[in-house]
Length: 438
Image (cartoon, rainbow, N blue to C red):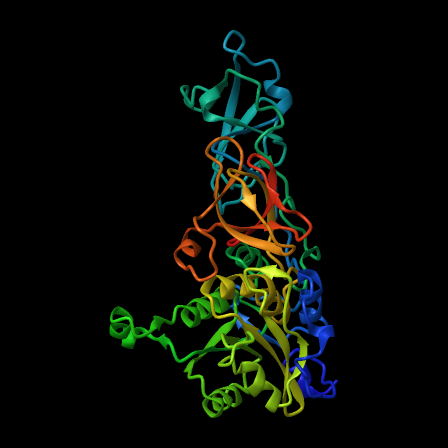
């Protein structure tokens, strides 16, 4: 494998003319389409970054504990370190009196041990003194009512509240593997391992290009009010989805339905790891994306998938020097673009970024209402989740038309109805892909 291909995550292959008319690339099932996208994908190169810059990335190295933590037996609460045998049978009717031989706080070392009939005042996190095997909570004592002594009135803490050395990690122990996604909790583990940085995979760069003469960005919204255009919600939305997946969006703006302009924009995206186009991927007269890609020696992987919304979605590669660039052509309807990104694009970005898990987590919920799936397609329907009644219930966010955008903000997940299932009845189980599964 050449260095150029490794740097972009895909092995080089001979580039052939796509021939969008190829039926073998048409009308794939969702699983087969995703398998074609993820085939031959390798993680991008690694780089060492400070811990806070690692958030959202995937580890490119195993993390091994450099020290034993905690390094000594320590107290889990404020109280008195004692020998358990000395307080067995203690009760309000039969209190046990112990001599206090010292005090130890977190960050200190006890100067003496605890012998028979003795106790030591101890604070949370402080090392347990030699001889002690239990920590009695303060409320079960008279809290030093008598100078130099403590009275214990309950034996429920025999053998309790001592955190043993190495309970968290031991030196040389494998803590995290390659491909583990870095979360704030991961940063805590890395810091506890004495690390100020980590080796993580590079973030993929994703060029996002919206197409269509009818689109208007926010600077031309007056034309939307006047009925002379529609707002471009897709490019900002998908750029945000790229960022949320831990990749770096490269906004290419809006390309008009003109072959020369479209080709110029596509050629200007050659440096990106992935190219995402929005709109122009159907079979209409003005749907030019396929035609222009073909002129650029595009190699098609597929161009329709048995899913709703989003069936006119394509995937293939453009030759970019010594490497090939994956290209995903998404439909122009907002919900179709959203769903196809979630189901097909996001896993590719996570795999390129080195994550061991590329797909969303799924839960099984109860359908709060009937969910129809009349065509033999896999349906992905926006649902809100509610667990206030003691069980997780999924309710449609409203009308499910692919041109609607408002329901996306209310969606907690995508209810999945397989293509061989005509629908889900109310109160029946339904699988839901979580849209925020961290």
